[in-house]
Image (cartoon, rainbow, N blue to C red; front, side, top):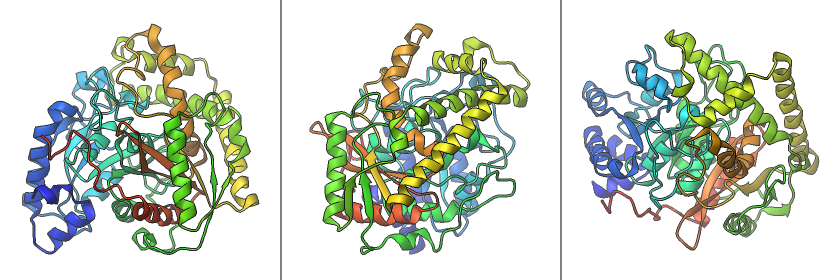
Length: 484
């Protein structure tokens, strides 16, 4: 059973299907690992062991991942009757529990996945590190003095440490890809509207939020995307339907693609660290060895400050919307002292934005989207390869601010990595982060591939090739289920 726990979700599901292991046995392994490791990781804030055991005893749906344990990030995905705090002291003080379950969570459970815990997240997912002042920092299993990234850092720490094979994650500026890069995992941000946000949410942050998972294998990511994608009534956007199941894209031979490589940072405000450049270079060499045509190129529009600035403006206004939405739902006003300094900073900016200015931000994002797509179309590029994060995992405390006075320092520190990922949320394109490189100190450095809207198929094809060329499945962090 020790080996079973380190298998990916696809392999675990196959054992259940063949009756070589039972769902209750898999759950016992996950819960034992959670009990042993989470005191060190601080990745889980709401254990759901009793609920998980009850669902297994009642009988699970005959889905493709029947019996496989997973964790659910405590942000946007609501589970009826269970706590939802989104990293907020405000919601924790209210002991808020939703009365309904979101559609994606229902799809996870219809696929047979067993939700065994809810994971830590920064307040409202607002920064790329999982260090909420309300619940304390989640640590990176590769180095407990460092962040696992954010905002899906709790889920990423659980998957990287071997507690579960699947962790729910969502991404408004890099929050799937950033923790995947910092924890040595696979993280796919799907095309806008590929995965629904309803029925409890509509147009979140002007369409910049995407939902899926972090995993340890490309085939798990493809299989779970197959299980949960598709429109829902009331979706404000739509994504083109795939031509075939995503798991069928995991082939060894594909036609050579043209792939642009970029070792810069959008906006040109700073430069990548040497480790990040080395990670991108390693990815480019592997792609060339696989027969793809690689050249140094990227969308010129990204050299200007527009994409990162525009997304940041929308996120800050969206943060105020999120706070006011919770006030509307709960009927209780938020006391500013219940919010973190960075959140208060976002709300201060949002209070000075008019409705017309917000529409200007959204229109500017749409113009950037068209300019980015022109690069793919005009030059015949299929994919863009670039860094997911600007440097190895930051030390805990570097990206969080405990006081209002500390906010400028923290924002300056977190922006370089945020600029690398956030523009893809603005344009709605799919992007996947892969663990292709480790530093001399043994820390993971992910790189990302970005495709045109609707082309998750290309991302999964190439990701599958890279997984075979530069395998990572045998790499486990120091904090893991075998070293407890």
